[in-house]
Image 1 (cartoon, rainbow, N blue to C red):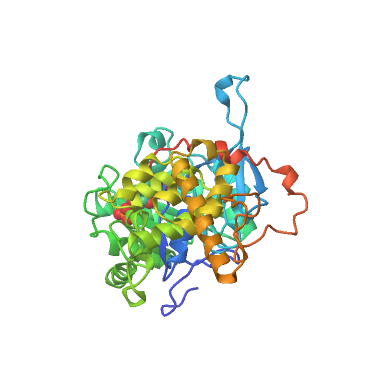
Image 2 (image 1 turned 120 degrees about the vertical axis):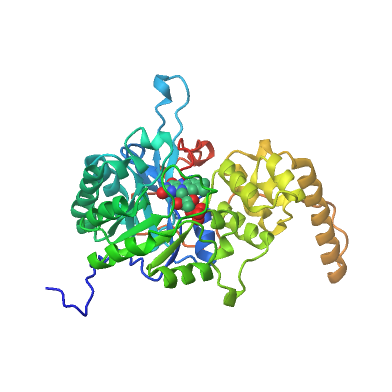
Length: 441
Ligand SMILES: Cc1cc2nc3c(=O)[nH]c(=O)nc-3n(C[C@H](O)[C@H](O)[C@H](O)COP(=O)(O)O)c2cc1C
């Protein structure tokens, strides 16, 4: 029996993580890929949610370790719409960093079926600290399949999904199961739903403080938050607030004001992930600093260039020249050139080779001339310093095959001999198509 003085607490499993006291990165399709998560972690996010991944897209995928950077990639062959003549190239469904995201990554599942949810969750359960169920996405692609916000109207189904995940994935893998919901039209309806959800064995519940029909730009509503937090606390479940949280300091103030345990940031982190830094630590950084960190993580992670460009468009203020140049860039060398990140150019060239983007570069002539100028200047400086005679020729070489990551970066797990370079299709990430999921809101 629980004593009056000790509030109940759903135990946090051994490989799981407690959401209490945490300021976290929200799940975001497109905007929550690995480099975005690593940037958020660098600037102080306590936990990161990955983008919603639909159960069926994960089921049947293969897991492999990328030998160049040690990331774990879940890949699958596209169906090709029944066509067999087109070359089948694997697409990467999900990519995570087992070292830098260890104990901090929550995998979010889009599902409308306990069986499929369990099947999909089992595939990633050993690599993540928790599984979250998306029960808030109001977009038709999600709700028409009974997923996302549709689950708010089918509480029996949502409860059965969460119970199945707790018993068949959370318990055996010792990770937490959680859910992300939106508020409903009245406190009574929301309260009735939350009262059922907190009895399923979940460790955390995130509430996006908007109703399903509300647009992202509409102000988040806080009236129901205390009530939701109180129901969660009575059941020992951590409650995380989401919606119009824009900085770490504001997050902490909201936690205090509304009695919630954690806070989740989406759009503010999408445009400037340094929002996770408190004012005491210097607060928001200028966009160039943040974009440099982000680009470094993109190169290390071998991120899809189209996704990188999408995020750059969010992070670079629209009036800047870099914004327009980044929009027409086609390769990593282009990105680094227009942003004047010369220190990242060697890695960018290597990644362009891997992703087969070198020929697509729109700034290749400028980059080449600059490389020649730099090489000549370096040689002249070195020659002048040493007093050596002028060499017969200079080499503008800026690329070459070698590890993209530097010594500070984890190397692939040596304990997995089966996952050797020979097993890995290097071209796979080159052709990774955009994840066919629209932006959930
Ligand atoms: C680009 C984008 C993608 C999103 N994808 C997801 C998602 O995959 N799963 C989810 O539960 N919510 C998703 N959302 C909603 C956010 O997680 C969050 O609930 C919402 O943006 C409100 O937080 P904010 O006011 O801080 O932006 C997405 C939002 C954006 C802007």
